[in-house]
Image (cartoon, rainbow, N blue to C red; front, side, top):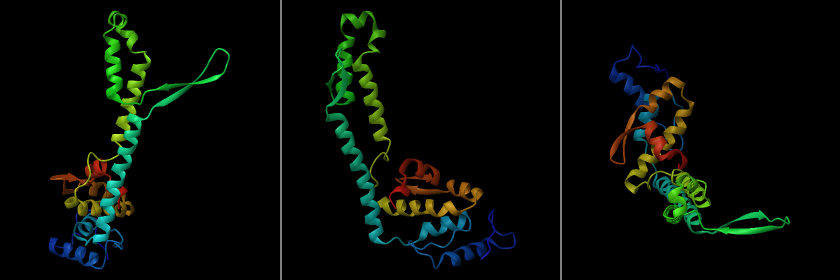
Length: 210
């Protein structure tokens, strides 16, 4: 089947162009999509393809799993004591226990130091205290973990769209660069708002759970 890659075959009417797209996509399935031709064909196929219930359950379970794994790591970061090894003057190793990397607890520690005369008079010295260094590390690691997953779990009513877009992203890898860029600008209704494929990919990463 030959379909132009830009704005449709000049020799085809709009109706005939989409009729060819529909006919080409008719035999594809979620597990076995047709080879990608252009942005219109890929988007049309993944917009309407039937998604089996077992796939929806799998996608939702994978989304739940990535959030639970992040929450477990976050809990460990904020509640597990850690230690640092130091050498003494006679070169033996000793372990110095440090508090968990909890931004709230460490912020309270920094605030308490800031109220002392020593650091009120010389606030610049507070920046080099172990509490402040730990606070920065805690914030950095917390932000890294939180940003490793989407802002919230994908609700059940949105899982079907997530499954379709996740596979669309994989399918689109075989398109020419220009067609793939065009596809990223197409929009879908997701989480109550119209979003481009590119924006949905950046925020929700559905390709990681299909």
